Length: 322
Ligand SMILES: [Zn+2]
Image (cartoon, rainbow, N blue to C red; front, side, top):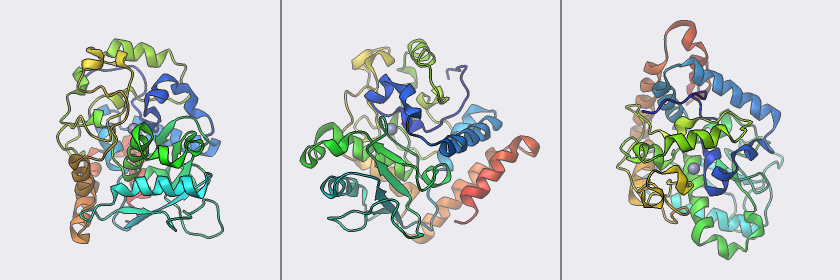
């Protein structure tokens, strides 16, 4: 496994989704509030406190799982017309799966929920069109590391595209991809059964990323496959909606690499659905069991004593009230 010198931390790994994102990574601190940045920094410290980067990555993947108390995730929009938002909702609704116990609640179909309206209920997923790039927090990170006034999922400029256009091609793919992250799915490049790790041109990626003047520390390990035993993993799927388009130059074989896609795939595959069902089975009993198993596996990764203090506190935040 390549060892790189940057801090072993995924900030909002989904920050790096997409071609545009990969081309201009440093933009991604734009529009993120100070408060939000502070919380992201806290998470950075926690992952650093785990030391071992395999453990920190597995931990990162595991703690973003939505607990069983969430049957539906409330989604709201910071902007966009009702027509645009209804189309985004319709596309994201493709994730609804009778075998899965977690889905999205957008409010009224023709008039999806707006963020920031009076009311005390938490909106778990908050969509913006205004920030740079296309990205989403992973799963529950959207409420642990971002506040109700922060976007948790961004689709830059999609409000300026005709709704019918969103239903096809790369926009459709990106919407499905970002909502996959919102459910807690990671990048397909990180699939523990994947082949991408040896496909990457690490020298190029390292110089590309370190030369980018990143404001937020971005984990190069994002490109390494997850190795934690309990990371949700199914077979590597080149058609997965979770496979991000990255620059050709990131791959030793360029566009010939099985890990290269020119743009997001545009449909959720059977294996993508299988990954969601394994995290959130429809049966309440099975879901609770999956959640407890994940929690126990994470607890094992935390070192004893002072070294694991921050991670234990995070466990409490995330798993305290399942
Ligand atoms: Zn992504």
